[in-house]
Length: 462
Image (cartoon, rainbow, N blue to C red; front, top):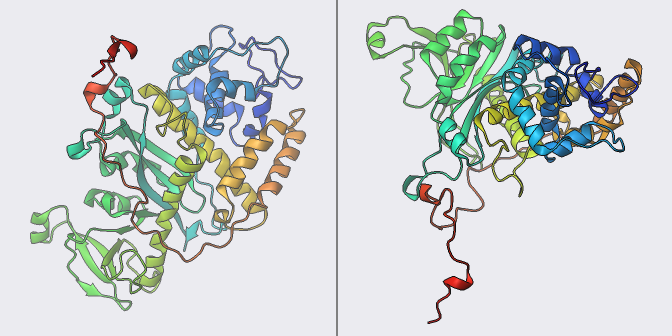
C-alpha cells in the first residue's frame, strides 16, 4: 500500500508501511481502501501510529492470517526494524473498534464481484450465470453482548445452546465460489426473511439455485420481473397441480400467493415441475420423491435430466462455506467458537473481513485457472491458500513490474495445485460422535461464581 500521510511509522523505499502485504493490492487496491473510508465518513484528522487506513489493512490481513493473534498479524505485515516496538494488543483492539463495521462492509461492496465470464468452465448454463443462495450459522464467543445482539439457540430439554450464534445468508457465484453479497442477522431471523435483502445484488440473466427452505411466491414473482431464472427444490406439501405434461416427463403448473387465489385461479405464476427418484440404494434419499421447480419452461431447450444434474451445483455453495469455516478459519484450542470477536460489531467486522480474504484467495485462484484454461474447481483451495500465505511476504515491492512478476510466479505455483476429478461418492446424513450426556451449562453458571475457600480449607475428612 502507498504511504499513509497521517501514519507516524516510517515507510520503506517504495513508500509502503505494510510492505509485506503489498501483494494483496493485486486484488484489493489501495484506492478502494481509501474510497471505502471516504464513502463512510471515516476521515483521518490527526497523525498517529494506527491510522484508520492502516487498521483497515490489519483487519483484512486478519482474514487471511486467521491463526495469528492481532499483534502477530501486525508483525507479519511489516518487516522487522530494530528498536521499533509493536503496538500492544489493547491498542490494536481499540483501533479496530474505532474503525468500526461500515468501512469494511463498504470495501466488500466495492471490491467483491462475480468473476466468471461466458468462457469460464462451469460458470454458466446456456447463457445463465449460475448463482446460489444459502445460509450458514456461526458460533460466536460466549459474552453477554454477543448473546444479547445475536441470541442463543435452544438445546431443548438440555437447556440453551453452548454459544450465541449469528446467521449469515449469502449469494455465491457457483462456478468460482465467490461469495459476492451477504447479510448478517440475528439467529432468530429466518433465511427466507434475510434473503429479501439480497435480491438487488443478483445480476440480471442469472440462474438462481435455491434449497427448499427458500421458496416464496413473492420471490418467484420478483425473479420473473427482474430477468432472473430460478431452479429450486421444493417441499412435498406444496400444491402443484399438473396443467400440461411435457415430453421429458416434467409438467407445467401454477403457484399462488394463497389458497384463495388458487381457488379463483388468480395471479398464478406458471412454473415447470420435475419429479424424480433415485434407484441406487447406496445414495441418500433413495426411493424418495424429489421435487424440482423452475421458471425454465422449455423442455426441449432445458431437458429435465440436465436440470436435475445441474441442481446439484448448488452444493458448490456448501463447499464455499466449508472453505471459510473449515480451512480458512477453523476452530482450534485457542478459539473454541467459529469467530474470535467478543463484541457484536467485532463479529460483523470479522465476517466481512473473512469474506474479503476469501475473495482474495478465490480471485487469485480464478486468475490461475484462466491461465491454463481449466475449471477453477479443479484447483485445491487449501493448497492455494497455503501458497498465498507462504509467498505473500516475498513480494518485491520496488515497482509495479516487480509486483507483477511476483504475482505471475504465484499463479504459476497455484496452477500446480490440481485436484483429481471428483469421485462418484456420497455423504450419509450421520455424525461420527454423539454428544456426551453431561449436564449442560446453564445461565446460572455464567460467569462461574468466585470461590470463597481454598481447596485445602474446603476439605472435610470423613
